[in-house]
Image (cartoon, rainbow, N blue to C red; front, side, top):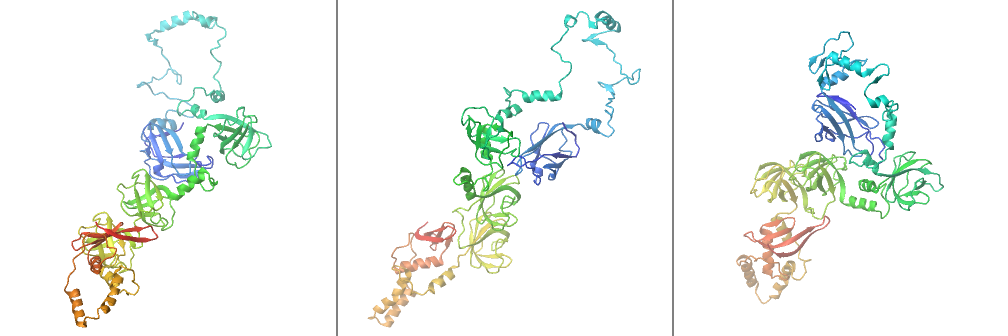
Length: 625
């Protein structure tokens, strides 16, 4: 039993920490943070210790830390537990906090209550100062009552004279003592501590099954025995002294070796032969157990726990078609990394712990999911990842995680909204006005790089707007055209898409050579046929033709097309009008559709978009909206 002084800062040691895989190797390089060290004061709920700082390794898996005056403020039982540290089994330790005066009386260099000779100085009785004895060093006892009745010195003398016979050393009138020569109910002296210990460990388990008791733990041990000499003994089986005669009696239970070179190793029992006591298991030990090595057999319940708690690694679980290998492969296919969030910078920027790889751009377009703790259930697309394990997400969390939240990085899925036209994405750094903003460092710092591209704001203040980038500087300052309707803000997410201006598209179309456009019903084929049709009109004069063409091109007007899917075989008028509307009116592009509108802004037709990360496609036109 250990004691601590109340409301006093003091260093403590706890351990040893051992590996949670082999249950014996000392863990000497753990990172045990302040948040990992939880205290329960006098039966209260566990909470993080108040003293700041990580634990420091001492030796052989023992660590030390400091408890401050707040940690030791409560008198009574104080429990420190450290659980959940990666790679190690949990450890806990118990102290009792004593009031300052009591602690000093016991342990101070000049303790008033005790000295090296074991003397006790009684200063008072029930608050009344003790009287000085007549003879120094000899306490005086004055009997005034017996059984609650007041007694005088004469009463006590009469009792002694009448009741005690000095000749026989007996108290007269007590029949049992007066006539009994041997008393079997009393012992001459208390049994030794070793005898008491033997009695405890030799006690039959019987009804000792209270939850949390050593008796209940003992119920998990189904049998114990020793290895016997046999030529068939190996790292996969041994002959034992087990008396059970039924074959397969111990199948799916666990054999745990408790001595010898293989002490601490355990395996799943796959076969038991009752006639010989031979036990076989699922995977080879590090060696063949020697004769007389001891072991215990644990119940199947402990085996089930061990199976579900087993760490899946490519080294230990790589047998073809085994469940362990299949589970490991499934996990690796979907979960790229997992661990605890280390730092939360803002709603879209977090730093991960060592569970993630420290290589820049290692998780492009993967998803970060919070699986446990604050913010659990949220998933966001990763748009940037640094060698310092800093993650930038496509949009803000609704509820920010904290440094106790557990994360998983999952492989990118088909819903990632990124195409070959998607040049950059990130967050607005500065909002200056409705036509001027500054982007974050995820955008390129080359002047004019994004001129005439489209910038879309999918999340945050001003979300849902899209504008042409009419100017772009090396300082990542963007000029928008036209001005925004609603202000964006620092932290609004952006996406830059390579869609040229209407003038650029028109130039490319009108400068295209007609020779390769021969598909029946296409606009190129229709225009190319004009030369042929003109030559056929040889009965008209050049003036007539010129006049008619001039009227058609400069005087006659064409009505805009009504809502509907593009025709399979359009007229020249319809084809020209559809081209005109596509080049001059609003073109709205989102992650699902490219929408073509009339002069009033109504969607006339649209094209579905698709992107699997390798190919970007636009479907046949269909009717709007």
